[in-house]
Image (cartoon, rainbow, N blue to C red; front, side, top):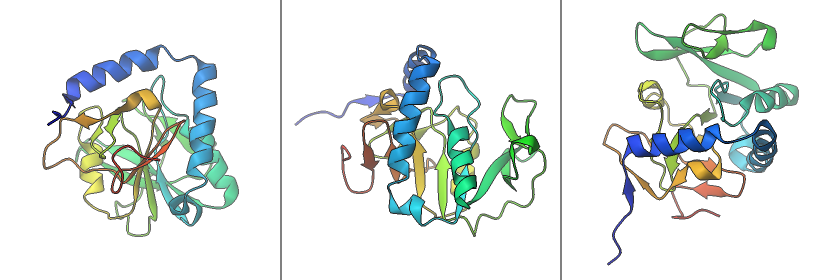
Length: 198
């Protein structure tokens, strides 16, 4: 019987941060384009009218800014997270143009004004991950903000990631919320049906 290769969250974070630091801007743009083209092909994205999406703020992340601009031009309603440190959670805001986006005290880009936290109208969530397993186990930066948010909605959850961010098994616990699909520059991984994706 083959043993599972289980990697601790701390180790996964360390590996990915190192690999992301080695990416050039040209590589990020090229791989991001491949990832977004794959995203555009799936039904969950095509038919979603209201999409929850983050703005990339860290070195070596998939460029969601180009995705947000594309969705805005396509007529989709874009819901963005706005950090609420007092409740350790996100409020929601609507994308109304890049002129209304600012960098907060934590170094993240977000809208200037947020409204309530209700996500009932959201059809699709595109969420960040530092590392993710083929089974949907997601590793963030340790704040727990997205785990808290994901407990409030049953909408499909998609992670956009570079191939080196994917592992077979990652340490997890019962409070962790799994994602439904992972899209990399090479493949679309359906975590609910297939071990290794398409």
